[in-house]
Length: 207
Image (cartoon, rainbow, N blue to C red; front, side, top):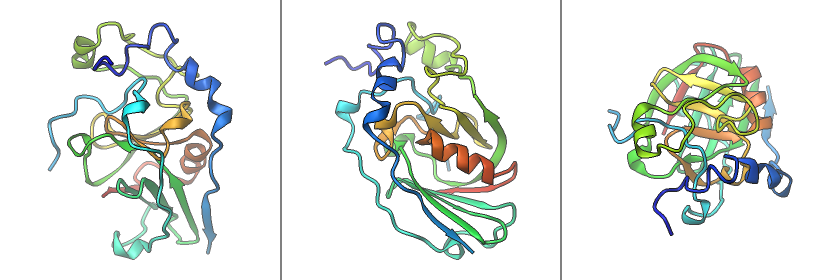
């Protein structure tokens, strides 16, 4: 098997194959309640992972208390837990809590942990690989417009760390897996809801 996880990219139309699989894995229910960086990563989003080589799909749903991770809920708070492969959200008034399954980075070397915040929100994001990624994978397109082939899905929350995002995915197989190159991925319907809850300045903590 080739070491290039994207060798099938050109002949499969990026994520066209995964789009056909979209109906085979429905997004699970979301639990709701109303009341120093490594240099190993040059870009945090990949076009298509070789999922045969990634650990199995699993998320550990466990509700958490925001006070264990944040001193306040000013502008809301997001906790991305790479061990349980879940994203937690608390609204600023504490009345809304959401828990979503997520994809997480494939290795610890690709994982950045710590505090950041949302600096930009985009519906229908586009995507560009970095020059270093194009050097490694010259067959990749230099630009992917919004749409079903875009690895960022339907919505993206850009973090203050360059190249890091919380975003959707059209390839539902990735959720619950260690399958990203650094970003946190959600089902498109979940990132759409999280997008509606958050704003620029929302606190984010990756653990």
